[in-house]
Length: 379
Image 1 (cartoon, rainbow, N blue to C red):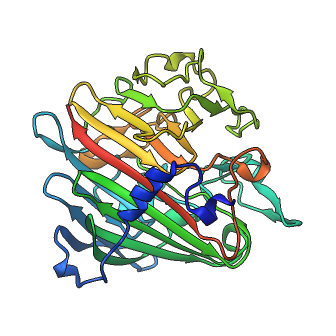
Image 2 (image 1 turned 45 degrees about the vertical axis):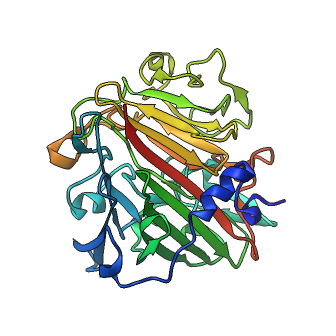
């Protein structure tokens, strides 16, 4: 059975059913009728297009999402002492997002992660993509979903204030086949989580792999790195890569390697053993599929905890290796190497070239579905 037709990929039926049941929503009310939701003008693009910023809150956590790139701009959560701070890297204004940056908070697609050599063959036709991460194509190309304006529809979901963002990617955009209709819904839930739900349909077979590219630093707006953050990944295997970060096709055990995060381990504990330039983690982990959180991050200094649950078969753990100080973010903080970490729920990178990887091709009549939840707490 195709993973997209079932809407799961790999999640246990009980978990998926629980997540999808939360997606039931009432008819969309006026903006002012949605408790915990507001909208403001975030500025204009260089082409004069208006960008809106939606604020979703439940009284304890606050999330802001922009229509430019369906981007998570900020996530404000309390620490163990109740001090609230923003744990998502990004910018104070739209100008920063319009410039060059490493996908802070963005919805990435049509295919997140890398496609080898920017080429693939599907149903006998060869397609060529932009080589924007030489020698490969990365995160949808030169103008992926992170660089377009999404239409927004705020509404009251069953479990909290929500905003649905939609975009239609035309056939041939960035070289991809088929007209793709995409919906991404952001909800701040009563149990202090940011829930992100994705759906997509197409009129022609196309590869698809949607993800959110938020960078987290549970210390808040700080100069400190994430190397002392403790990470747990419920993943006993990973997909090794070549020196251009393309999977070799092997699915290997993490046991006995620096990539073993099956028990809580500081990100920096073994990072010096990750050879190559620029060093660090940028790998797809094969999730074991057990109920509960797929990944957990704990900051010992503030006590903040992030738990990620997803219906996807993999997660890209990235330790901010390419952050180089060229981006000055919120409150004037300069983002240097290892300043933030990403947990990108996904199908495996370059799946289009690896028949042994989970299917990442969406066909007419099927619906792509994904639910990923980032839950916050403190201890």
